[in-house]
Image 1: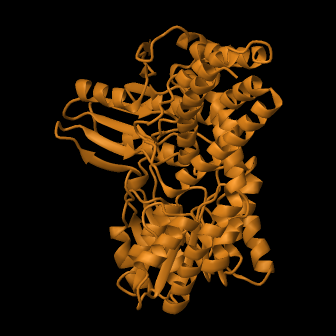
Image 2: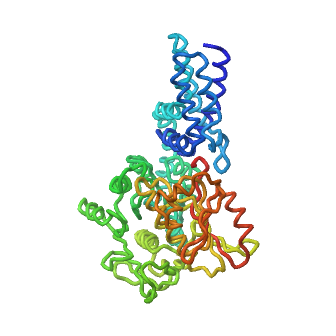
Image 3: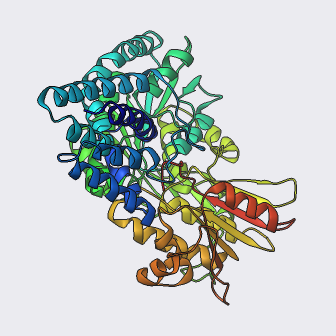
Length: 543
């Protein structure tokens, strides 16, 4: 093989590897994720499709012409356009795991290139390796899966020993959304009665829980609250095997990560793994599939506590006492002002508005606090101080007097509607919604984002669509266009173009390349008395 072509290909391979390893890192090293994102990026627009065709042409021609791999090398070195190597909002972090993945990828490349040189097929082998870089990243991660499991065992073993030594009551919390919020509520309700340690922020996988236990669990801790998330079946089961929670909460089921699971029923099954070691199961029976799951668990002998914001026969209820009688069904009712009655096994423990707290989350947290022995009076006295997790409907004033609602950590339809309701009920001269939409919603993603666009346009004066991932769906909803019209409207326009002017019942819609551009626009156009909602924020490995 020509040496210039070979070394050109090596350099291009290093650039491409860094790009796709960053995607893998941002996707928690999930096998198959780099390849999925590669398809999105290469088909994103005309420039990237041309680059992909050029790379593919280099592969096809490499069996005939010695110089053909250089075409593929050039294409993968500069493309896909828009996907940076270092990243802006989510930069590449050179961790132990990334270094291991990079080493495995380099060894895989060396073996395959060596085989190509020995067989006289070096050119086509190199071209395939270059264009298929995301696939080789995923293959490297798959090969490393057993090794990563072995490496994590010592941290798990250490955390399990610490849990056994301290021996707190162990509470596990999961759900499609609301996990972090419920964890914060429960900690607030229990603190003052018992010594509590909870996993911080969104630490909800094996590594995060291990770190929380090993660094924060101290003698005298009476209650340990672990948030547990999952991207697939078996992950929560693996965590419960060593955490061994005796009280577990399943709070919500929704289309979050539906892209990975395939169906809501699979999400229910994966989340329900949290009850494997539990003696008490707490479920929000208003959520999809959880009433039936509660019945199944009760039949198996577990103590089941059913929570509801709709069913007065449930064990723990948070039901509205008063609501605006003249509000249409589609209106964004000010939920924070609605008075609600909280009952625990028929005992009324509190009545009044919950402020910004989500009623279903309150119900689950109150149920768990009661199980942990907190008195009704103490629960009631602490409900007024429930915390709001960072970046989840947190509100504050900018130095210029603009009300800023930060909901950038939310990525589910229920949470998005709650944030829009908050904006709708904010006294403001001009209202703006900034959003890239929601992701990983599977087949419902386009529909949910179209609805988000429609709802945002109902209440806002301006809707700013960030990025390209959900642009067509959001634009169609906000402007009232069908998919074909929305697609045509985005062709040939720059990312900053004004797409649709305000009419009597719909907002002005703008499309911008990234959140930084949107923030600049907000700062330049909003003033004292205005309000902006930042709804979700995608890392920049998304288009």
